[in-house]
Length: 141
Image (cartoon, rainbow, N blue to C red; front, top):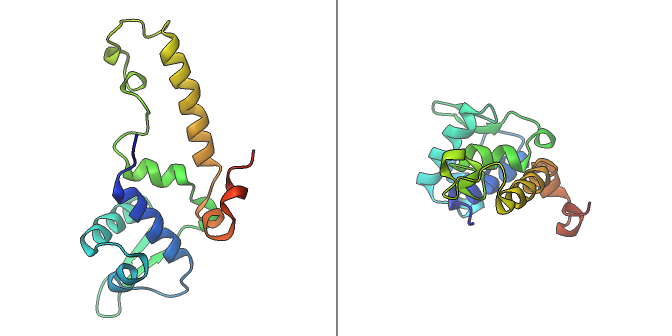
């Protein structure tokens, strides 16, 4: 499993915006996050629709974070950016089980537990955590 590059860019952008006090332009975002301008616009529109980023149009316009960084979890960002969060298609729909053993498959049971732990880990880390804590602190249980 590999996350889309747009999810990585979204995290970079949101962390950058969380450190800004004023509106910033897409050019500033691109320069400070090493993110392609085309990705920035698409990501910011998605984040705006989700209520995380405000888009101010016009000559003095720009972008700013409107949701508190402590309230934005990695799970929320991943869920906005990724087409699916499930680690295997058998978790999406019982019709995806080629064994027709949706309720009894031991592999699916393992995937369910793993999926739950994965999601709980993502829910337990905020944008604020990413910008203020060391990596080792983020994964302590």
